[in-house]
Length: 604
Image 1 (tube, one colour):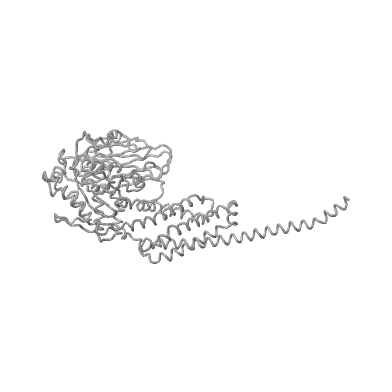
Image 2 (tube, rainbow, N blue to C red; image 1 turned 45 degrees about the vertical axis):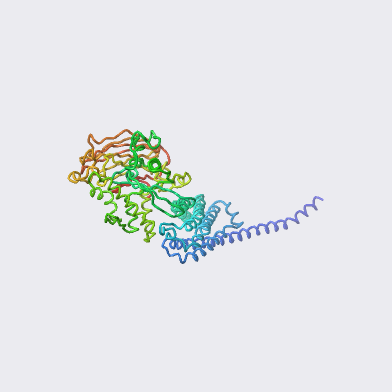
């Protein structure tokens, strides 16, 4: 039996071997087929994505240059290409292959790029293409004092999903480890990540603006805003003193000008603050900023200034503003270059070329007598009305106007605060808010701010410069050294000829008092504050303080005509995360010359 059994076993062995060989051959053939299938799909996805990249550049150019006639066709082709690329990656074999070491990382990266491209094409480009005929700033330009609210709401409906798509695409790409992929794929992925990162701030700001716009323009009921004109001839940290105020009312897009007031319209009892005094803020700026409207812009934080201005308006004029908007004459000059000159009853033509010199100097020299302040206030009020009319009735270039406003916002010369918490929370994420960064993650910002303490209008003649030197990109515990220079362009002869309220009734042109505040980055410590040039017994360093989570070095500078004074402040930071160093300064009448020396930091 044993022999017979062995014979049967031997007889089955060749058959078993054949079965194993057949199975192995089948596996090999399937593997080869799968590899070929996978390779084909990879090549198809690669080709579609490369074509989509070229087409995406075409779409971006059409959106930017204003010729959108070819946008619908380009969008349709882009959607087809990205859908094809994505379809190639949504395959069981592809999904299984993503689990294979090394190969899987590359396949996963291709899929992530395809998903992101398809999402942008579907939810961002396609809706924009469908609305190509209305993608122009002219649709929201005021006509006869009214903004077309239907157009605003339509743009908001498009912007929301488009912004969400770009944010989602950015998150998808950020989650990919391109260090684990082949060099060409790694380069493509990093390029896409950089493009999305660069687009996100613009997308977020545009989306925020359009989502807030309907309610802020009175879609849900009338809104009242106080427009504060900052006088840069008398500098404060945010720009200039709150010299003239105008009430703007907006009801479902219809804009009208209301009551007007000057700084003289508000109470000045130094013992009667308009809001409860914050002891920490008062320790740096003194409590008078809570009792005098002129000084409301002393702190480099626009929400503080706006709340003070709103409280002054409510107490002394009446009514609770829905928000506060600040603008200075330099920003006004940008706007006037877009709208064209405006005529005033005085015979003046206020233009982009003469607005700064006329509003901040010429008008004071024209009215040097005791009634000068009243006459200049009336001039400012009429100028505000004239510019308002030009803005709401203008038939000028809307793109140029948008560019002018954007420039003013970027330079912190136009700022806005809302009394509605949800709106203010959204505004706080934009440059329009006038807020210093609260941490160093994106950028390690040092601030240099000025405040005239002469009760004069002499900053028309002041030149300033600031240089920041830091090793934040190379040292674990960095230092931030800031050198500041103030120079008076006045001659003594010019100073002697100035009207008293321009030259300061206290020193009458002999010298001028300026307070300088240097803010270190959040979390740093002030390690040194000195005078480096031209200092004497009348120029000194005050006590160090803290504000907005930052150390503050304070200087009091007495500057005679023609004199130059230099100051230095050094801050040290503990180990931590530091973005590239940045420098924020008061938006002066004569723009501060700024330099940042940061060895080892990325270019740009």
